[in-house]
Image (cartoon, rainbow over all chains, first blue to last red; front, side, top):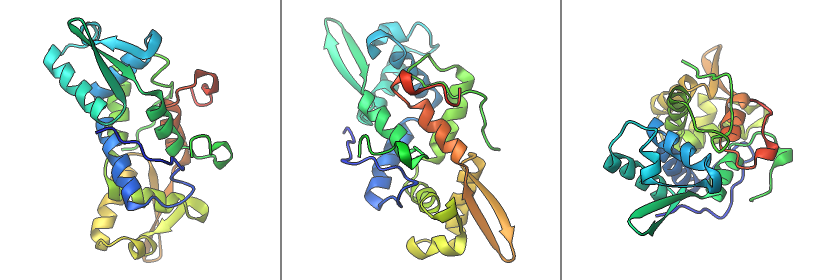
Length: 116
Length: 116
């Protein structure tokens, strides 16, 4: 289930609530695996921030089912969306999700408030 | 062992290397626990971004050894430093570590390059 909290106040601005911490921890857990980080980055760095599993399996030495499993975890964390076209599933980055995490970790309070 | 990669290029700019992904995954793993996120935020939101265990145990319903364990994980990930003064250990946020993570997750390439 995608996690979409309403606010994204930086953690340095005020103490996180229990609920916000639980939601955020789930997203960071999805990012706590090197393979998932590489897959997310490989998709994000492509034109259109989109790729199919067939394209991703080229650069990473894993079977396609394993790659699909990791992509599913990223999708369930709200970091990717997926769409089936013909025989392939295409994955696309959710830029707002990355931006929200970036915002949450922001240190300089002068630059905040964009997503809050 | 604190993780201090030389660069912090956003993952949307170019695909992460295996080494960078492994280092980053370790830091995200430290952030993948709600209690650790709340402790980090509680310290970060204080004046001076510093707190002793005695102050942190007030707001969170956990024993002091458990809190100390979570703080140790955050310290080993390079997100906190610690210093003993008299009978208490004080923990301080490493703003550069948060800033680096925020940078890595940045989506707008126009705002990058500060830490790279």
